[in-house]
Length: 389
Ligand code: ADP
Ligand code: MG
Image (spheres, rainbow, N blue to C red):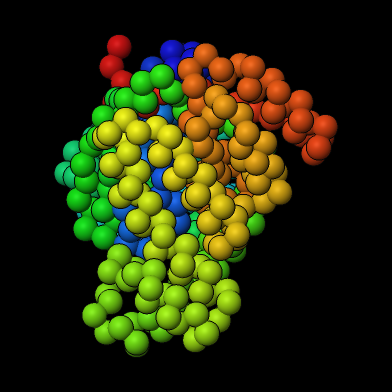
């Protein structure tokens, strides 16, 4: 699939620009084992890059002209880097314009280029196709024009691009996972300091299966930004009562519980989820290192219930997918993954049981919602890189 993607993207470049691309870059999507909606709450997360990619075929220009082709959407966007870059009604280009604006601000960048990009990461399914696009372009331009940005700076440029040009106040997890991914390793990332450790992703008898609800997360932007405001308000109240608390990380469940009335029902639920989720990530890392997969699965399922009932970012279809596997002996745990309101569930399942499970759940899902389920058996792969033949 990767070979085919590279071949198709390259051919499209050659057809469009009558030349071979000078460089090919691959930028992966990501999964997250646990630690949802805590990256912007100074928590820890446990993501990994996967074997689904945005492929960018690209060549420099000798002037500041840029032509970017989104092959999958059959769209072309042309502009000059000396133009004032502002958010555009054509949504997909904003992920790239935001990156270019950062490069211009930080390095007085003005080198034009021609590029074609195409992807095997399903769009809007919570596998972070957006971070893969942002980080892929930032990485490619950094390499091609020797801009000297570190990998961490590339991830931060991707995040800032999404904040400024797309309007989603995302945390750093998606971009970090896409850039720092390593084959067969999950990343335990401290979202406060950006310190990270790789942990062996050896699930032994088990594998990770994604079930894609095929519901696109159209409410994500407003939902996401609302949640950020709610937890910010909550933290401000907690700090008034417990001055030693700087972030959710040093806030305990008891503290949140003691302020239940003051926080009010909604904000209490949001804060309670965050504090519990930060703890669950630590417990999950321990479970993974001890190969205690029952425990890991339980934690994933607890996360789902928290996201659904307390953080309220799930939807009927995702709740159904998680509840439908609850009594399957081959499934140790399941949860919605990503920002929510649609996208995939991630399931820890016994190797070899996947096909029967997919068949069964697909049928139930079709008859309940009239929607075709998609599924992906993902492998944990390396982060954004240049592809050399
Ligand atoms: P995801 O969970 O996949 O990151 P987002 O809504 O955050 O979902 O980002 C999806 C958006 O990213 C798309 O609507 C599009 O604007 C852009 N994008 C992602 N992949 C592609 C692609 N292959 N071609 C063009 N645009 C893409
Ligand atoms: Mg995204």
